[in-house]
Image (cartoon, rainbow, N blue to C red; front, side, top):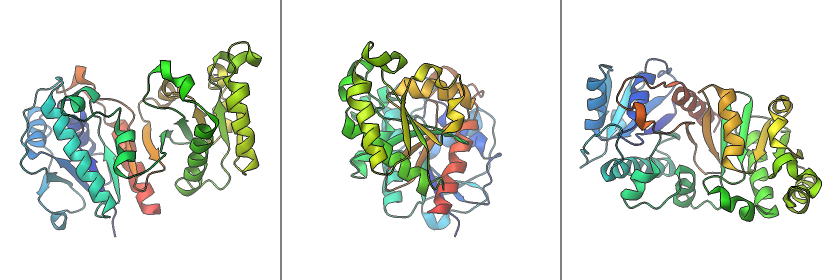
Length: 326
């Protein structure tokens, strides 16, 4: 049986529809059944407007889906207005309907994995969804207490202790239990999802120079180092806390199977510099498989035909790989 991979449309005024259509030519659609969950008028608009002229199989039920072609599962009673590059309530509603459909289909085992195209947090909030991002919404809808945001590009894997919170709240949010929980999820995922029998994990400090012996902050001594000791005692192979600034420059990341950063930009800034636009966002700890490209809606270039589908292609391929393993 070929895995069925659901693709959520993301913000219809961003680059999501464009990169999904462009990727058709570069994805091996004989190895899976690709199902794009979207209002049909959105796909028709971009396919025509950008002169992509891709062949599509429009379906109303899964029994009509086929391999070798992009299947489009229409969201019923939805023909939202398209305003490229603009944040609107309609675009937020369309993106969330697509996500909710994919989650339910994955939970019911009708889909084997889902790949989410970028949403606009402003658009979805205009539509009445008060969520910080995909990751937190997926956790809520699958009744999962703790999930882990992990960025993947071949052997480079960077996970986050805290994700979509303001920098002013990071220090107060970090505690031993959180670090232990995130590192445990990371270790389990590296074993189960990536086939690494004894994964080696580097854990970053929070402060500059990892606190510099307590001169620049006490979190390393009081929270992070004790958490690392407890993780080691439980049999998880972790080291740290490492200063984040020189870690990648000294190529220390090549010595580890994954890195656990303390906050969003600490982990994602070096990751994106090293992954050259081909990184994948993977949510570990969920009962379903979810990947996504590592970029946003790119409203500034939406509708111009210049969006690069590379990260989406990698996200789709990883979803297929993980679905086959599971």
